[in-house]
Image (cartoon, rainbow, N blue to C red):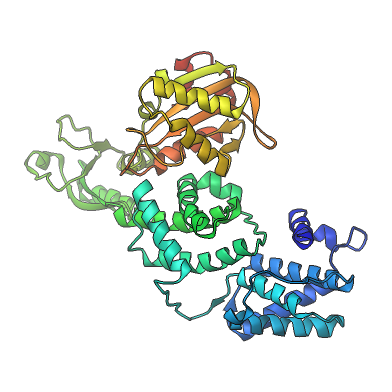
Length: 477
């Protein structure tokens, strides 16, 4: 635990500060560089991939171990480690130790070598060019099956056929399980970015991490959850790409073949992934044209008739405003704010003193409106206990652990005074997010809209000061 404390201190307060001669020198800078060099040699010798973060962590732990051994503090025993189960890590640890001993003149007892094995187990050592065959029967396989089932049943995301996702997650889960088992500290430098930029994936990761918790009977820390979220985020992006339907576009142009071609090429250049131009016609041919295969008409002249299709009128030379209008039409996530906000679910300038009373107040209001089940408040509080939903900028977005409402909507509350939400974070604007059960729709657009609002400091300040519901809805729009 003392070593964990030292490594946390080093990695949190910027290693450079502790390597300098004049400061509290926790580790010898020469030794640290040498250890890194030794690890890199071994990694290259055995054709192993190791991430920069893992390399820093591993070198830090070994440097701290040297310092402790030198002062006579040796690890007496490591619980439950069966060294013979890990021949590859055993060889690596022995070779690294031998070189460190030669360099420092220290002697590493077996328990200290086991300690290095534990750190190698918690590091994703990945053989280059080696296709890892995954057994259906090992613990990683069991956990991943559980994750895939839970993500499908609770969020309607089906990753069962996504082989890339399963492979990436398997490679991640094995060392993650070891890190948790041996209580090794893990840092995820991207934690806050992941929570902010990929909220849907982060929620999925919280649900998926329950599989590890149930299996190991241990809590999974936020940093680990965020790593799982990255894998889910990649799989969601892939799923979106596969689902993306290219819109078939008919161009109506009144000014001759040359300009029609120019418009057609520019559109293809700008929107090659989103649209396919099926034809270019003159306006007078439009009435006799079969529009059954067309998704969108882009025209250089106004069209008065109702074609039963979206029509976008543009300048022949496609100006910026035309491009933005087409982008809006092509965007499948053109979610209207009005869809999520309703005056009956907006509560301004409430005099509530703490996080729990805000959550209880909002859930009871929704229960009165027959929009949520009676135990809804417990689902929201349970989700909050896993990792807090405060976002900085005086905003919190609490929500239930699993989607249970009939529709997706927001419940908004502003407070007379800021309250403590988590550690140093104060909150004065709360948006309770209620997600539709078994939702088939892509929620990314809704999240993006919400995040664009909560990251805008001046909008948040205006929302907090809003005196009327209409004023608040206008700010959201």
